[in-house]
Length: 230
Image (cartoon, rainbow, N blue to C red; front, side, top):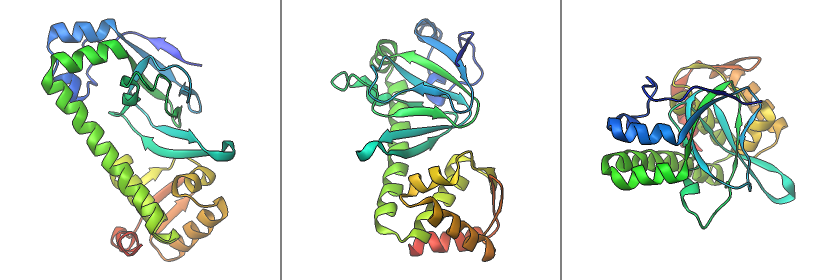
């Protein structure tokens, strides 16, 4: 269940893009922005429902899920604080949410009305540039992982994903994965059994240490070698 909290004018957790806005523009943003809290497992927005807002993650982690053939869910990405979700909603031809966003930890988010966000993009070129830079970096990370999932063997795909978690998502060698092995398997395109077997092999080789849902990268150089070897 979402719980609405106060608006974010004067917020100290601004994105780089929002930090560029002047006071008048921040007032416009606040009029079209609301802050909410979600508990782990709660739905922020659902695929194929009408899109009215863009979502900014203030804190926490969110998985982006797309339903494929046979009504099987595929995890597209894990997004963290600082991410803008649903920028695709600016394309009014789309009309509906392209994917679902689900909290994998407790999260705080800002929902920004599409019209307000669009007006700020049009009126402030520096704001627009920062948003585009974020989209570009996010898409490049996604494309790189997509290509690797197609070209790499399974050990390389798992190494690539663990390296992505270590350097792009959590930014530390020890982290709580926040998704289970079935979801990890969905992210890299394999079965839960294969993921479980490979995690055990990586641990026996001294590359990682696993403890319940916690993963520690012990040998980042070796992990990178497997990632690059594919």
